[in-house]
Image (cartoon, rainbow, N blue to C red; front, side, top):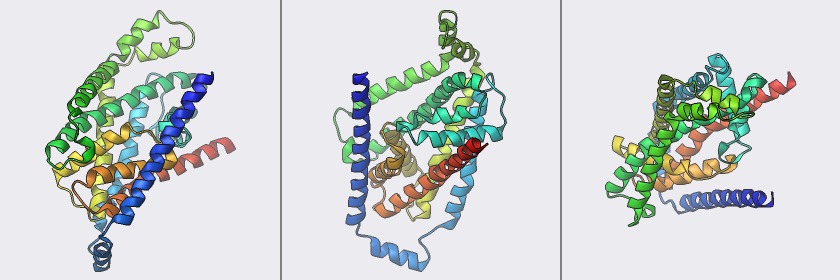
Length: 321
């Protein structure tokens, strides 16, 4: 018991340190930025903001959460039939419970809260299966993008290492094993279904019935959602005057999300950590650090902070009822 407490404390301290370093990095970048006069003149001249791109970002917000809602509904087909609306509410409540846990690991608790009590245990396992698909999406796009980023000749110091090839070999092996694990979930569950009794028995009974076609559909939904929020960031950067070509956007944004996925953070430091990574990577293509930070922060507010607030209101309404 004592050992577990030490591990939790050490993990929490590490995440706090990451958050503090990210905040300091952002402050340093803001203080050392020397293009404020140009930004101000662009703002006064009316050519700073590209409002049509912001409008497109806002239009993509429903698409983002609709895809996640469809994925959650699809995952639950053999457990509990729910509407798209109820699935959307579950996703929002999951965002709310996720803010109280490191790495949003507590998100499943909010998602299953609106389901029938007898289905919550199995639904939690299905949430984990769905999470694997998003990690696969990040890796499938992020690893080739990182190669493209390095070979572009504009790499950042973080990637200038002779041992980077070993890192890629390990990550590629991890991707392969992750995809293998995802598509073999039903087969693995069938193996354990007749051998395990008690708490996990009902979970394996559901997981073993997931058809291959549904696994493909869930993975496609995750890939589409990943591309949607990458497109949102590209448009938001353009809104603030950071113009990236297609290959620069793919190399920079996919690489950024690859790093962000494996960086620990809490909800309160998540915006700072994400902005720091975006600034660190995208500064290879643009020196407008203030615009990169603003784009990342505003996108975080629109995509996560506001939906999380809606989830808080839903939970409050459920408790009041």
